Amino acid sequence: MILSKKVRLYPSEIQEQKLWQSVGTARFIYNWTLSR
Image (cartoon, rainbow, N blue to C red; front, top):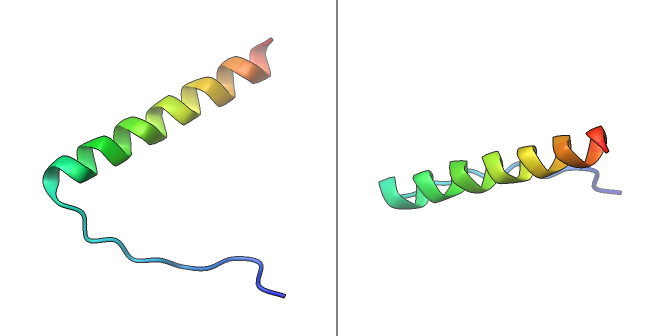
């Protein structure tokens, strides 16, 4: 059974900004949900 998989990304500068923005949004929603 595969439990995890490593993936290497080589995003452009714009893609990297969008990726970190998405991670930040997901973290905010996760924390907001836990606090309710």
